[in-house]
Image 1 (spheres, helix red, strand yellow):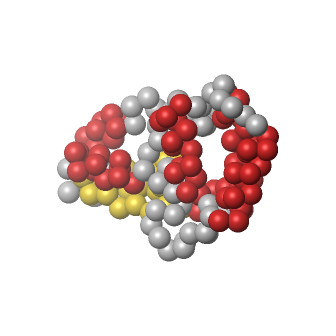
Image 2 (tube, rainbow, N blue to C red):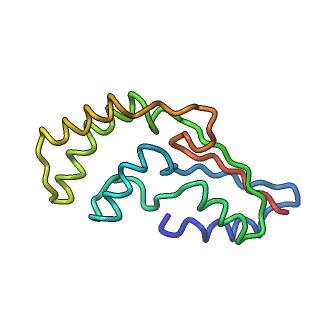
Length: 142
């Protein structure tokens, strides 16, 4: 969606008293996002071909407050946010991001980054609410 907030306003108007809106979005508040978002903000490097918006739980909290709704959320699909799948994803993604943004793309530099990440990124505690790659939100009327 170009404007992910607008549909929530429309949907809220159609909710029954005990109705709920359930939404999933990628979560960019994790090690994966903390590595990729600077590339987007500093260089407008195309970090994903699928996502138009880079949302975090804070965005959902702000929308719920703005809409006078109650928000309950948790993150799911934790494996993409850190650990082995993050490393595999970055081995494929980082060279493509650099290429598409026409930034310096030396194979040895990318390999050094991947090696550093493999050895130094601590796997997150899965009990942390922000540790996952996807946010599952439930909005309801107050």
